[in-house]
Image 1 (cartoon, rainbow, N blue to C red):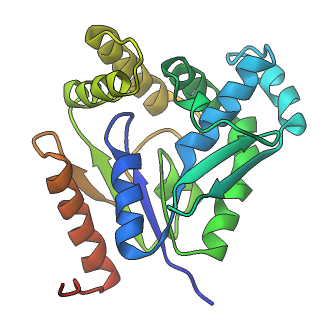
Image 2 (image 1 turned 30 degrees about the horizontal axis):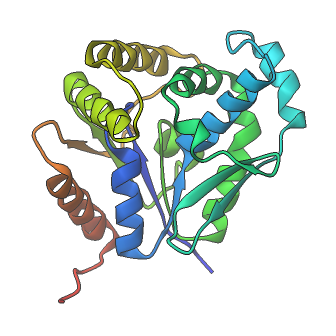
Image 3 (image 1 turned 45 degrees about the vertical axis):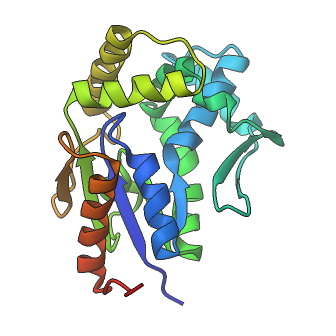
Length: 230
């Protein structure tokens, strides 16, 4: 059986996870949040005292890790580290920096590559991240590069942190967004970039519903799927 894959790449705070999750529900695809996988590695590196700037230290930890994904009845992805559900823990703001640093390490990306590709071989998937269309699933049926201005992405991230009850300062969040953009685009291994055959979706001036409709239309057009009448 042949499965279809949709790759959504873009910088931090572009709304990839929120939109990909809703799109997956709408289309009946499995949603794979690859950022959550890297966050799990970042959490593991921190808990084991590995320096994220030293690849040898992080690489030494990898063989010890049991990282798995699970899906609840609502279809939401849960991350498990050594049998423990760390879905909430990996969303702490501090883990964002750890995730960005370990994601730049070739050893980490190689360690997780097959997990991601295997999922796409076994399901219709919507997978979001920073190198899905360029590295993980270069033959994806649909590729979208989702982005927005740094200020707009920082504002979304700021609201998200407040809604989770975490303390946050907008200026600090903006600095973190800009710094993560710099790291993600300049890293040597699988840098963030738009695939040549990806469609650019710029959502700075769009709200969530408008962004969703934009992406849904792009996907249906490229898959040749007509909108169902309700």
